[in-house]
Image (cartoon, rainbow, N blue to C red; front, side, top):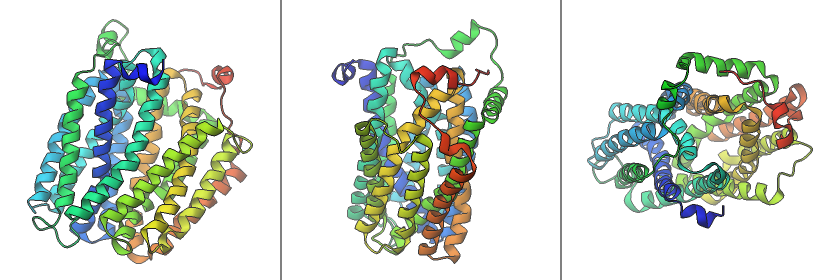
Amino acid sequence: MNNKNLLRDPNFAWLMSGGVISALGDQFTMIALPWLVLQLTRDPLALGAMVALLGVPRAVLILFGGALVDRHSPKRVLMLTKHVNTVLLGLLAALVLSGRATLPLVTVLAIVLSLASAFSIPAGTSMLPHAVKPQQLPGANAMMMAVRQVTMLAGPLLAGLLFALAGDGSSGMQEGHALGLGLAFAFDAFSFALSAWTLAKVRPLLPDPAARTNQAAPAPSVLRSVGAALAALWRDLTLRTAFLYWGLCACVTGGVMQVAMPLLASERLHGAAALGLLMGAHGAGSLAGMALSGILKGRRLGNLGLTLLLVDGLAGVLLMPLGLVTSSWQGMLLLGGIGVLGGYIQVAVFTWIQQRVAPNMLGRMMSIFMFVFMGLAPLTAALAGWMASVLSLATLFTGAGLGLSVAALAAWLFTPMARLADITPEKSDAATPTPTR
């Protein structure tokens, strides 16, 4: 089915329209929240601690969120989280617009927002098969992924423009001085409310998981389900090595990027507007990298593993000079290049995991994969915040880039990562581990 016919499907049209506005709103908050914390504290250590405080509980809960969504309706879980986020972001917007935002209040609201995402992320990724027919899934997935990348480009740029025109709190958090930040949170609240309305229009094609469970044998406990997924991961040497390597990369670069990027925009460039430009450039690069991957039709330098390690090594090289930039365009060029490299390999990595893992284990394994990035990176953000208070930005970025390149080299020399190969449909059954409940 072509894209034009897919858009005529009412379920997909409602889901797609809500997804666009919600993803766009998320980008506003992703820029505004760390900037708000930085303006309230003027302390990189506090920013790093906040990133860790938000990320670690969410990452732990997401392991259980995937198991819960598997046995309850994704639509119900997703709808509940949208209503919660609407209220919380509305309160956050009101605090900023009235000049009453304080670090304790912002922290409480941000933590609850983060915990809600532990359930909304697995629910959102599970929703599409409930909304469209099986033969429509490939086209629907491709369109949804493309839309997400477009919002990663447009969202930060629009947010940066809003901050430049309406204020980002750099001159103080008094009423009216941070109008742009308040409007960013208000827009995200509106996006959740609107996407909840569009989600209500979706009519699931699959029966409720709870209804199916009542007709079958009792399902294992959530804790046992998560434990089974972790055990299956540990038994698969190749998969375990890949996850450990990606976790190391997240530790090396993830926390640094979440702390150092707002600091770079604050100390060297033009405030929150520059941060939006930098993140927008990275989103544009990711979109271009995905397009390039499609054009080259999966061409590799030897195999998937070698290509992946080369991409990580080159990304580390581009990361090193970020701490030396003095103009936004310089940072945009570097981050755009990093985005192209990441976007090119991202599709291949997700496809490899989906083909490697047994279908009945895929939801939980993807939750573990998200835990690797959403848990380990924020955990190292606290350390990065402390390092930023005693080291220069140039040293911080150079260390992160060098660490990523060294990790790629070590993986090539001492692990099976360099032998990873794309899994063709003919080999998929042989590569997939034995299903485990």
